[in-house]
Amino acid sequence: MINVNKNEIQRYLGYRGVTEIDAQISAMIDDCIMEMSSQVAPKSIFRSYPLEIGPDSIDFADIHVTSKNLLKNIKGCKEIVMMAATIGLGPDMLVRRTEVRDIMRAYVYQATGAAMVEAYCDEVNEKIKEEAAARGLYARPRFSPGYGDFPLEVQKDFVRILDMPKTIGVTLSDSLLMTPTKSVTAVIGLAPTDEGCNLAGCEECTMHDTCAYSR
Image (cartoon, rainbow, N blue to C red):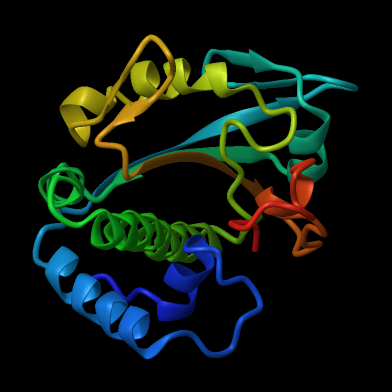
């Protein structure tokens, strides 16, 4: 079972900075967590690649990308991990079934699924950190295509390089939307020293101060 934080679901519902919510909504969230937990089918894949960092460009696997925001995140790194994770089609199907009879509950299911896939990514992230530590490397915060100026088009490279349709059952539409929708791709820089990184994904986004979903 994915260990999801109820406060994260509330954040996705727009209750950012709110310490107490309506009892009925709170109970619905609890119910949705239980129901969605029975529908998830978590799968993930990650692979490490040598990393070359230029003055304004980044090369790994066979990807060449320009992103000042990602450069800040992976400064000093020697390797980069490409990861992809999903909690399966079950959550999407649950939302669709619910939309026709209870739009509010469907909205809570959407928020629950979003929080669950992020929680699952945290679990995968920890495994990556542990494997990196065993090799004397330190992991930076994960950084997804679409964060800041890291192009969303890189999703195509993730799907191709990680063979996501085969390995975890995730496909990509022409509009760069993943199916199942509760899926995530990200890179994680690996550095030989524990210098840390001041900025994670949300903090690099230009919408950070106004977005209800930002951390």
